[in-house]
Structure formats: C-alpha cells, structure tokens
Image (tube, rainbow over all chains, first blue to last red):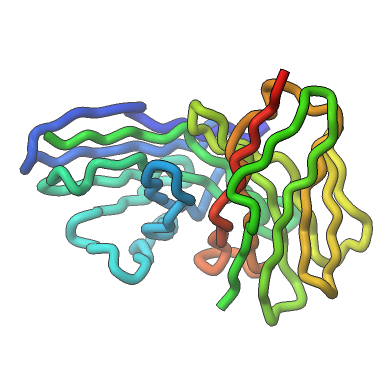
Length: 118
Length: 117
C-alpha cells in the first residue's frame, strides 16, 4: 500500500507561537504533496500544493506568510503555522501524490493533525 | 471550473443491505479521474475506489462498486452487504488527468453514512 504519516497527531499551543507539522510518504516518493484544512462536519479545503524543490502554490485566500510550506525532499513536506491564533485551530491533513505508469494518479492521505491554539 | 456535487448529506442503511451514494460532477475535460474516499470517525481519509474516465468498465473493489455514467457526469458508489465498519463520511472527488500542481482533488461536500445493526 501507500502510507503517509503526519506528525504530530495533535498539538496545543499558545497564541503567538509557531507550530510545524510534518508530512512523510513512507513507502513511495512524492514530488507533489497537498495540504488541506478541514473544519468540523465540512469537506476538505485545499490550502496549498507543495512541489519538491520549488515554491508552494497557495490557493486564493490562504496567506503564504502565515502558512509556510517546505518540500525539501521527495518524502517530506512541512507546514509551519506562524504566529498562530485561535482562529487557526483546525484539523490539518496532508496528502501525497503517488505516481503510477508515468501519471501522478492517486492521492494518499496522512492521518491529520489537530491544532488547538489557546 | 470543475465542481462535484453530493446531494445526500446523510444516508442510512441496515447492516447486510445495499446502499448507493450519489455523486455528480461538472467538467469540460474529457480525461480525468474520479474517486471515493471514506473518512471514519478517526478522520483518516481512506481511498475506497477510483475510476479512470477513459475506461467504460465500472470499477469494483470487493463490496464496493461504482456506476460511472460519463455522458450524464454521474459517479455513484454502491456498497453491498453493508457492515458496521462502513459507517463514515464518504467524499466523492474529481481530479484532472494532468498531474503535478494541476492534480489536486476537488471534493464534494460529503455524505454521512450510518449503518444500523
């Protein structure tokens, strides 16, 4: 199968601090990873597309200076929530795109990270 | 822009029975992929089944099968012999056939499936 891990699974932090979330593809290489945010009882909202070795592409309305994304290797992407505030509290999910037959076809998801900012 | 619509916010099925979840989509592209993902209470997104638009044959994965109607832009999921573990939120998703940064998923709003013992 295709396994994607996320760390930490949950984090509580004080307002104003920064939080880093790691997303790793454990058994495949992923040139593209995605970061989503999910509010309770809602669908996933794409925040940004992370490409290995290049700058991330952010969706409209997502502050790139607040949500820093780094994709330094083919198996690791990180999302840093800078100067977190209570409104940043949410469930963050990453996914990794697994290539097959020359096409990048299927996204596999990490287990998510619950962030609570006090 | 592509859109995905799931018109059933909630569905319920008796254990061992069959249930069908609806999904329609809108696109001007001819080549794309369609997916059903399951999100149980743990919130881990799990791939249930995928369909390539160029394939006429409906995808099946054990108890899960799809009814893919390309002309009607419909992609329903049938769950046979429903089990308690099938209870979850189900998301239908669309992805363009072109990869890279254009390969992001477009999700429907989801259908919450309850399974009654």
